[in-house]
Image 1: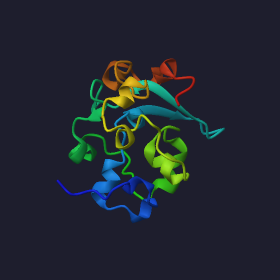
Image 2 (image 1 turned 60 degrees about the vertical axis):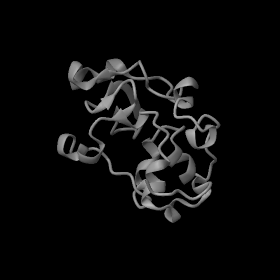
Image 3 (image 1 turned 135 degrees about the vertical axis):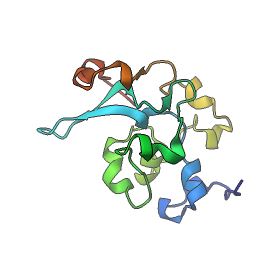
Length: 149
């Protein structure tokens, strides 16, 4: 395993190494929820419908390294693309928070020391998603989430 610098998450995103960038993910799974973007308003609404590759218990992608083979439209988030993507990332997302110059929340595992605190704080999608293969795309609007922090 690659050694991560102490408190690397406080550095500007463009200064992170690839392993540090990957380690910034809090494991909430919110970015793996399917979203609806309304063309007339530009509003992005999250749904409870999860990507077919999301494990609803671990809140992790089951095929992360080869996900584009199964989900070609899956976004590749990088320091170079964050400025185009941050607007639809969850407000609690570590990538978005750091892009906006905000600190990580206390429940983030890099702060708490435990990968479970994101779930204990109720900040993950654990246990409340619906797999996308169970819901026709034209019915996703029936699964929208009013407030996803």
